[in-house]
Amino acid sequence: MPVLSHRRRLAIATGIALVAGAVAAPAGHAAVQSSAPVAQPSAAASAPSSKRLHDDFNGDGYPDVAVGAPMAALGNTEGGAGAVSVLFGGPGGLSSAHKQVLTWPNRPGINHPEDARYGTNLRSADLDKDGYADLVGRLWGTTTDGDQGTVLAVNWGGPSGLSKNATLLKPVPGDQRDGTGDLAVGDVDGDGIADIAVGDVRRGGHILHGPISRTGQWSRVGSFSVDGTAVLDTSEIAVGDVTGDGVGDLVILGFGPGDPWQQHTYLLRGSRTGFAAPVEVKDAAGAGVGGTAVGIADLDKDGHGDIVVGRGDEWAQVDTPVKKGGSLFISYGGPKGQSTTRKPVWINQDTEGVSGTAEFHDRMGYSLALGDTNGDGYPDIATGLPNERINGISDAGRVLVLKGGPKGVSGAGSKEFGQYTAGVPGVAEAGDQFGAALALGDYDGKGRTEMVVGAPTENSSRGALWIFGTDATGVIAKGSVSFGAATIGAPTGPSRFSQTLTD
Image: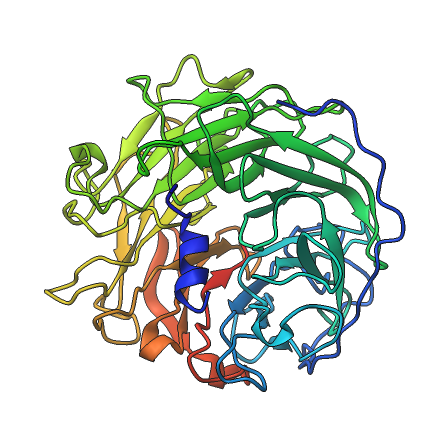
């Protein structure tokens, strides 16, 4: 049986070719509304900012971050209805005071609402093109009554933040009955409107083309496939412009049918008429690659998005030394996909300049976030090592930040952070898994991306969140703050607060 992706494994452990043209849009998608308590932000914009940020829920021109707590129990202590908290950006950056809390009620219209795991998988984009970012999430193990397929929940952005009522997009076509596939957003057809890519359990998925209305209707539906490739089970997907043509491309991570560690990455080039046939992304030795996380950013600012794969599942001691304990794989983009002038690279803790030593079970690359932390114009990479042993303490976790530049990413100038770092609140303890979730965003609008770190298993799976500031050198420990769900009025208990973060 193929190994499950890290998102699927985590959900289960906690309770848990191109298709040419477009298929006609389904008629009359039902929109089901919920009611949930919400704390309104203290300041609201009267109209959306002209910046049109993909993660600005209240339209004030500052990015925001959504924090998932999918095991929050509401009414049924054995289940995980889930909750999502929003921290709003502003001139002073993120804080626990400027926030919003959304919970998932025991509602009709879906099976087992008390175990919906709202907050398991979160993405942000302006889906209805009104200038406010919206939040879309995939409910875990949940189908609508009488329907097959996945259910997506959308909270709509507006001057006061996200709507307390979530619209259900249903049913998304495809083999998705267990609700555990991946989700990504981006413009894959070049019309300037965000689309939703929803991975099937097996060999592909569907595209819900925007705009998506607040009544739950998408404009049309298309699909993508890795049929004919070495992938049997798709696990992670990302959208970004790798070829530099202004249209989002699709990157798919998946597992092969044989050895469960046999992993692959495929690029499907987007266009106004559909996706090109999948092309495998390989390392400099011609071997297939894969992992637990994937992101796309133009790390060297050459006009082409670069593919970053976090391979954070290297548990077997038979693996190659370059990937021991997990690693990052970077494939530089070019007009046809992979660059023909810059070779792809592997980076792990044995790479020159990177803090620490590569050890089995560290899980470097389990989480990823991409953004310019020092304001030099080049995106950097933050990656989590949630199972890193710290001073003999197992699974305490740490985060590494690697710098981008005109020559790409290397270990030079890398930084490390953990609960053992001077200035960082807390104490490294066994099982904290600091760094299991990450986000980077310019939350104070000063031109550098601050870092948000999640440790969902901190304090017996109650979870905690850290916010790091920056200076001209990038992310810094000085002035960092930490808090849990209770501080912001979110549901307490073993909710796994900070299991997921938008970025």
